[in-house]
Amino acid sequence: MATTKTFKWTGAASDGTKKSGEMTADSKDEVTSALRRMRINPLSISESGSSGGSSLFKRKAKITEKDIVIFTRQFATMFNSGIPIVQGLDILSKQSENKAMAEVVGIIKADVETGMTLAEAMKKHPKYFDDLYVNLVAAGEAGGVLDDVLLRLAVYIEKTMKLKKKVKGAMIYPGIVISVAVLVIAIIMIFVIPIFAKIFTEMGAQLPAPTRSIIWLSNFLGGIGGLMTAGGFIVFVFLFKKYRATEGGKKKTDQMFLKLPVVGDLIRKVAIARFTRTLGTLLNSGVPILDGLDVCAKSSGNKVVEETVYKVRTEVSAGKTVAEPLSSSDIFPSMVVQMISVGESTGALDQMLIKIADFYDDEVDNAVANLTTMLEPMLMVFLGITIGYIVVALYLPIFKMGEVIGGK
Image 1 (cartoon, rainbow, N blue to C red):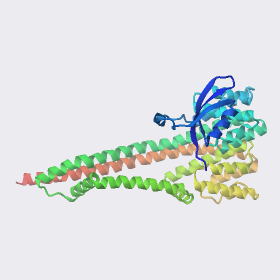
Image 2 (image 1 turned 90 degrees about the vertical axis):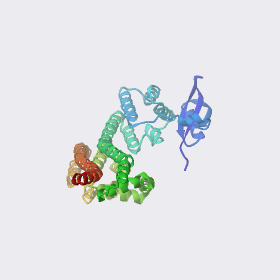
Image 3 (image 1 turned 135 degrees about the vertical axis):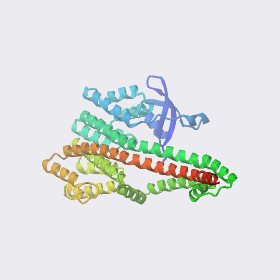
Image 4 (image 1 turned 180 degrees about the vertical axis):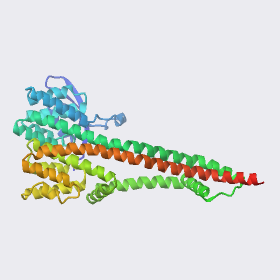
């Protein structure tokens, strides 16, 4: 399989002006073809970083979800105003502040000019336009409602971004507290306790068990033990990622995450919100249900949910409703199944799915708040016990020496 590389190019446009830029592709031939579709005569093409060491420090502009949302909304507005697709793409490629986005839009424009549909042109850039996006655009083109579909896509991406932000936000506070706690404890163990240990040794004091245990741990972490602990953690993370990269490993770890207290409930609610919003948006835009379920499975982000959705797709293709196979799943609660069943029986499944997604967005908010509320006192208790034990262990010998001096 070819490896995607970044190429620098210079070329002459049809009006004679010289242009240059960077392009991600599998080979120089692919860059040449893309430039010619953009009506640029290539003069030189070289792999980025091959001409000098300084280029190693240059970072290519990235295309974010926000860039895709802005492009989608602007394109929908232009198309709704009667501007032809090619002209709209040309305007967006020239006005985009993100050079990488401008380049991709320019390539899509060139492909559309050669006779490709917009969906076909976008499908060549799966890194930025996934199966959901391409399927919706294809349905919009076929149904003559591309502007409406693009607006739905923009709303969908914004909702998805908001959902991700909520989950990430829930992890920031505990992450900061844990990092600070580990740093403070490490400083105490490695730099503070050895000073007390030296004082106790010089005084010839008989140390109690808690003090001896703290000094032993300090010596362990300050020496080879610290390196072993750090190395062991790095190796564990590396092996865990490798295991997660395998098919069986991803399934096992996803099952484990779903069974975790509080966190598992949050993951389940996020999965339900994503599935229902994705399928609802696809059906509402005219995508066939089997294609919609296929896209939902691929974009689920969880192997357990993916397998469940594929099972639903198989059952639906055999003539069953969506609700029937979902009822035997551990992922989807009975309330969701019943609402989907009502949606199917009334012929308003797409609208019902969007309502479920909105409901579970609020549920994710509550789950995030509960997670933060639960973690905060737990972290405080952990810090209090740890720091308290260290302080007591260090002051016990001092108290005992004070008693001996007072007795004399």
